[in-house]
Length: 470
Image (cartoon, rainbow, N blue to C red):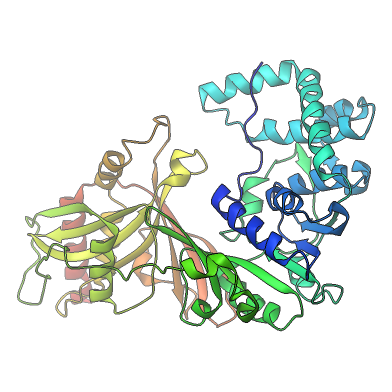
């Protein structure tokens, strides 16, 4: 029988747990209670128990169905109170289960079945194996849950909005509160989209790290409890004052912040803080920029050069000064006749994971050429060319999955108007949403056109010629 992988992928790494266990042990005398928000797979709950905090003093919460199935089981609540709507065949399977641990196990197996991709042969075979032996897999899950309940028995769990937990008056100076929020907006929605097999709505809006983190952290600072917040990758100047530990791995930095830095001054790990070094652009290869003395011709040579992050962001800042840090999976310089015309960042992760068939343009900047209108439009001509598919496949070649379908490109524009002329007749508008700041967020996408880079340049120059005649 198959060994089931994780259902939930937001796991607190071991080094994080080591640091927090030490802190919990350090604080347990003055703060014997802990609220663990966004508790995920209960790793921090287990860490708190290992640090000596009584299970009855632990209040866990989350908004995901996976965490809620576990939390309800560990805290002795009925699965029926979750009000999950199952497809008819799964409902029949669920109704056959004899007790709460079997019902919880049944829901988890149904969730796992939906995560296997039919297009991936290996995963399709696993799914068939589990489907043919569902009750056996449920029984195996029962043993795992019963063993886990021995650890977590006595904890409290509720489906709670993080925003409400931060201002819960119950959490006074005798409490610790942890927050390890989802890294990206919509993480839970993507992770737990089960189609019609399983439908569940907790009625709570998902946390948006980019939009809400700073305001909620500042709100947490005003509360009596000791707040511990995880911040991923980037840290602004204000937040540096609240860091008590930094986790470094390769080029990635994660930061643990506290709402009460003065109270953790004696904490041993507080003396080990280190910050990410500023980007070093000394080794960046220099290219001359395309300028008004240069002429674009149908015979001009067009090349996409795959570069590292530092090189791409150097030219990005050079073309549009200091827009802030951004990350992409692949970075390219677009050279025309050997001179830099554009820098772009593109993600293909959803394609290789079979979640999408179009690569995603994260950013794209061009030089300004006064004698050519809309140079960003020429960039989009290149990004919609079938030749880009060949370029991307080369940089995606190390991926273990070779069965993806890369059909085109998608992009997002922010504009004060309801349309973006840069993409007109090149990409199709698929959605438009007005933001709080008055800007429109517009999603565009297109299959690749059957023209190479040279033909794309020719088409753009012809378009320029026709515009001049009008």
